[in-house]
Length: 178
Length: 388
Image (tube, rainbow over all chains, first blue to last red; front, side, top):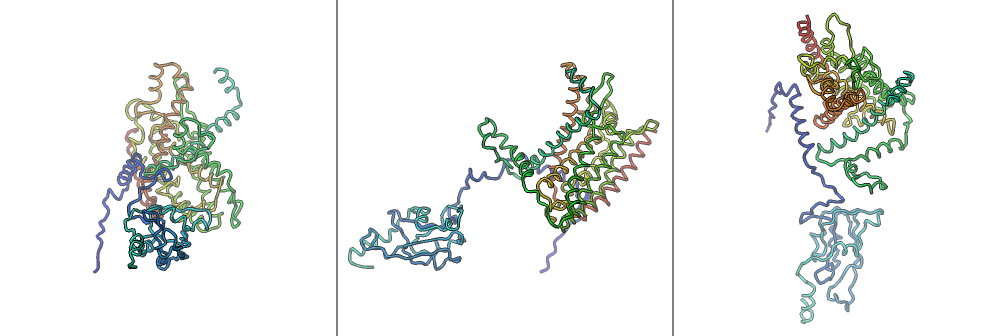
């Protein structure tokens, strides 16, 4: 439907500019003495709201066990193909032996990452999270690729209480595999 | 002290003039430079930012209280100056080299020439007569300011043309059209002031000193400043001044938004710096002329001229009535007014957005010029009746 914007003709006061300019100067003068609205960045840091999508990281459960089972779903879903996983076996005598697999290498190329959060969404093990860190810097391209150790260092431990693989282990020890 | 005075009086007038001229330049350049910093700070504060506050030479960090200077951005000023002098002075290959190099110089010359006829203070000799502090007390004062000041446009035209590229060319064309249109309104707006001070029968004068002398009375019409008796003249003059100095909202010649940098797009390092200083010098002189014409020059208040204040101060200490002290006080009052107007220039710049080119031309030719002519006719009649 046609929509007409009503345009009022300017009044005389508006056409001679001066009162309008003086009113504008009053506003700017008020701002001259108003406190600053900017943040002194490196010294002051912004408060990160919950649910912020920062740098993707790998997390461990409260027992310090790596949760990723290298199913490669995140690698598969990643739109810019920033994630590269090399799956590896876990030796049966390791403390985490009842877990089927763990990544041998897990690289996220932060030069490709678009912070979309699909990896976090798709992860069945809740092992990858986009957390608070918003600033990634480096002098070389190689520095901008987060390897597995760095990802765990950034991710830390999240206080979830699932302990899925403990339950699996207990079930296996009782003889019923599932 | 007297030895200094006799030494000074014994110097050749040429050397005296040279020293005075250098002193004035020595004050004007730092103020021009400081204004660039003040501009950045004022714009920042108006936009809710702290502005430049980081630079600090590491070997000065131990000085107590230096943090305040750092927060005021004083070292950014020095860093900018050093950068401007040390960076590569590139000369584009496609320019007309002679005129390209000539343009910044041509920009500086009128800026430094007009300052010679602008009085910036006064003292009283033993007979109680006001003696202006001015490099050249010409009787054509205001005419010289307008004549030489308007030569500044040649530097913009030269720069725009010699750069041999599109944006500077457009900037140069705009500058010439704009400056020529506002020259008329500007000149016409000050005519009533000189009608007023030139009583019939007396010797005619266009001297800026006489304008201030007229505003130095203690009662009646003589004590008023011309901004009170001729507000329309003052407004037209001020608006034209904004246009003449290429300040926003009439920033047509530079036009960062649509012309990159306008006439100085191809310029860099100190050649650009000269344009920059010339612009601020023009602003300084423009504010100075406005102060002299409409704001009573070095008189502190309407109806309270400098002489009255000096009379009061002489009661405190006879030292304050010494010509040297009087001169310094008058310069202080005058500079205070001028610097306030420099602030107004910045204040308006960060308040009013830029006019479109056709609006600028329309405002100049269709609004300000008729207004100035009408104003002139009105005051001519009023003054004719008053002075019979």
